[in-house]
Amino acid sequence: MSDASTRVADATGNWVDTRAPSWSQPYLRLSRYDRPIGSWLLLMPCWWSAALAAGVARDISQLPLVIVLFFIGAFVMRGAGCAWNDITDRDLDASVERTRSRPLPAGQISVAQAFAFLVLQALIGLAVLLQFNRVAILTGVASLVIVAVYPFMKRITWWPQVVLGLAFSWGALMGFAVTLGRIDLTALVLYAGSIAWVIGYDTIYAHQDAEDDALIGIKSTARLFGASTHRALSVLYSLAVVLIGVALALGGARWPAWIGLIAFAAHLAWQIGRLNISDPALCLRLFKSNRDAGLLLFAGLLVDAVMRA
Image (cartoon, rainbow, N blue to C red; front, side, top):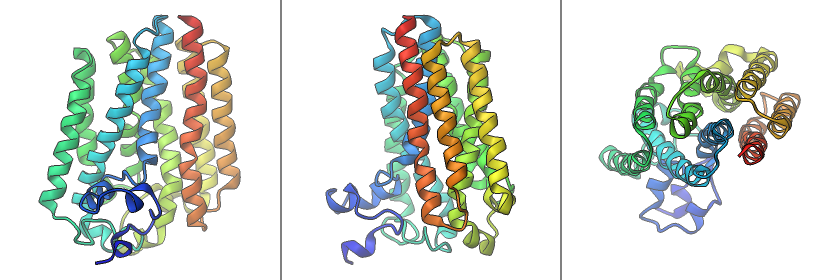
């Protein structure tokens, strides 16, 4: 089998295709290391909360280490989550043009091999988690319930993106648990704002597969909103900005954080203005651009934390 024939349809020309040893490529593709955007999006709420909590504590001494540990944890746990998702969805993936070339439906690795790689990544994630306090450890472990049930949601509800939001926004709680040893109202409001953001950007992502999803009976907010997607995104993104703004106010954030939020909001507005749900390539580009939106907000929160220390 040629290297080209083993590549995933929507992820070619990346470092996994060109540099990784051939034996490792199916595993790296399984966990999306060839497409790290999901890891970045999982990481953003972690970094937001770490910076905001450091500002609340007026102490940035541990912030660099927390940032690094969250980076490692986000990448390995997203990898484990993708492996679990592909194990549960392998039959569905075989029916969708964009996903049928993934390692499991393409027969490049077995379910047992995929599960073993999942466990390896989860153990690395556990090692990261054990560096934190008891509250943070328990908070991190609790997230596994949501991760476990997420792949099944698109079979039973039109709102699987809500469950994804619960999982991908969990880091908004983790930063406070790690830094302050508690989850307070500020963390919960930040969490809610992040959930609205995730539902919005994953709706954009889901429009890539809307036609195939309709054929095989998979539900999503992209199919639910349909032609009203722009209006729905306006509501979701506005809610995200307002809730995150409330979290900043509760956390006593100063002007750099607010500038970060304004830049974040402007980026979301730009996405809505550019979106064409009939253009899958554009949907993917706009989805990926949410990493930049998240980094804009993080930059403001980081400067704010440094100023308050």
